[in-house]
Length: 537
Image 1 (cartoon, rainbow, N blue to C red):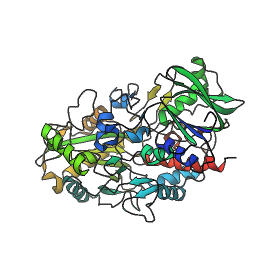
Image 2: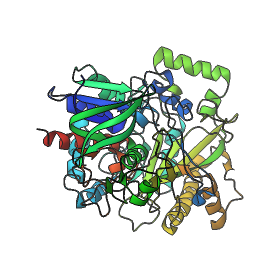
Image 3: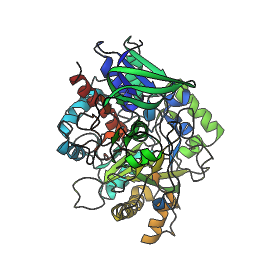
Image 4: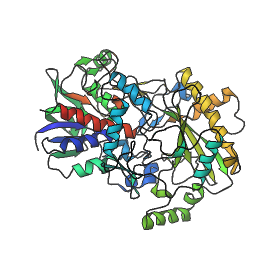
């Protein structure tokens, strides 16, 4: 297949969906360029194995931010998937769509992206274990586990404590009510990670009209006469060019897509000129409006056993392995975040502004170069984390050099607004309130981090600046909008001012969603494919 109708750059959450949907009719030839390799790796498929992928260069871009004043000067580690499935192959597998009002915000300036439109798409793409209803889909390509079996015994205590603190249980965060505490749905199927590659790309790869080229680093979009006509890429040390008869679609995510646009001469003019890149189209918004959720964990030692007791000793690891390989159960068959929730830090808010993560697990002393999900603390420990849902702090992505191999400059600007600091301060106080309720307090031995000596507002703020970090949801860097004055793509995800070029991934979010971003990234691929097909010859 030397010619192709569509080139998709990136086989991540959105790119895998695009590949499946654009090839389904058999009428279009599609080529996917993916810088990473195969997802057929043990720790990719093992649900709890994502801790082993956190610093693995074989599947991970291993990005680092610039020193961030909002995080006490730290350089935050930003793992992003460099593998078939992208970040859906290395994430924690929580399936959260976001609040309906978030999508109403999207649709206000972007026709076709309101809640009703997006809900219809979610119901079409999902195969929810809990069954179909007015919110959940049944029979779609993506199986979503209801995650009700094999939960840690502490989960009911956590949910009860939330109720005692004024946050009642909600049965389905993707249903009628997001606010509340409960159990997270997961992209896990038959005790294996159900990534976008497994659900969408692998079935599509059986079709003769789809070609997937791995180890292919895109270096620029080829633009002729104001239209994208192909992609230059490097594979095995050889420079190649692939031309498209139809369109070029960037699906590299919130870091790679703006980076590739800038390498192609689309972005801030002064920066491109300084790097010797001819300016094809000046648009200051390329790489701007970077949004991300910032999170922190509070940790307690416990009077009752937790996953620490199961996963720390060698015999516990052996037992967990036997549970997994013999019966497909045990802690290895799940994410560490069994439960969670959403709450408001102020009663007058119209929707939750904070997300919770419950973990019957703790680690205070991580190993160098590994997120130690499989080697926790040598005592019974529990953590409750939280992250902000709609931060007002924004950063940006900028080229460091004119070479695609060089990581771009990532300026996160975490907690750079008073709004975000005040929200987090209120949130950590509520987190402690949950732990102080009878359902949990009777099981807790002591607070280990930040520790009972951290009590004043100044101390709490200093603590979360020192210990917070990304929860791996960067987005909005090629945001959708009416024109190029404050955006990069239109409601059809077409790049303003350039023909034949779209960006379809989390970078095109108009604003960040309240919750984990894998679901809306997959939604972008699903609805983006509809837009591409509607414009197909």
